[in-house]
Length: 195
Length: 164
Image (cartoon, rainbow over all chains, first blue to last red; front, side, top):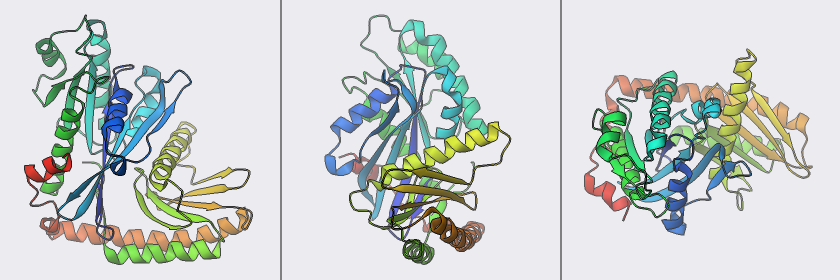
């Protein structure tokens, strides 16, 4: 649910990073924050526990520039990945315009990935969205680790429809902006259609 | 798709801004702002310099969402008013027309009673404005006026340029 303000000529879009616990959602936002021009970003807010696990959400506002005279702002959110924070995850999906699913490539996390994607589908449906029609990108994160599953296998398991997907190493930034850019594009094209 | 996109035109923006100004004066508040439930800042008046209103808006919406979740668990529809008391500044948060959130920040120059009273009056006015907006945007949709969207002619290149 984007917000178009004709008075201040602004458009605000909400993007959410979803995925199992410790898959690197917050790390994605940290990298984007680090690499963005200071004029273009607001403060990054992390509501996290003392051990830096996300408690409610991370929030990063990005003002990327103008399209056809409209200031375009992206509000990036992450959800808490741990299973027992489901109530909070539902809240953050309210009014979402696009979703990045960050998958953990490590073999031992495949089950967690599948569970989390299923959880995403259910929670989106509760808000009246359909995972098959909402702008959506999958990111296969942690490709630098030794015990990773082959991408082809992950595609089969997590992305049978062959939607846009990217390999990434969020700690060093590989694939982070490709993912964001692709999702932003899908969301803006959705706006173009005027729904 | 859930809900409709919120589209704000010049005319309604001025009405909203005027009402917030009035509330700001009458309630002796420091800052008054309006946020939609998804955390997007709609308008703000008062001493906003030095305050990160974007972040404040997002946290307010998170706050309302969390409180709403608590309400549901207890079988309440919503908790429509929240109040946070600080050493110097206080925040009064209320839900308007189930869609937007009105936030009033005030200090010892005002009082909770005064703020509550003034917020109640402004709520009615703002509810009316948002209802008009809703009707208007539905009419536009019915007329198929969406082609006026500034994004109708957006190209791949426009989007690539955003990311430099």
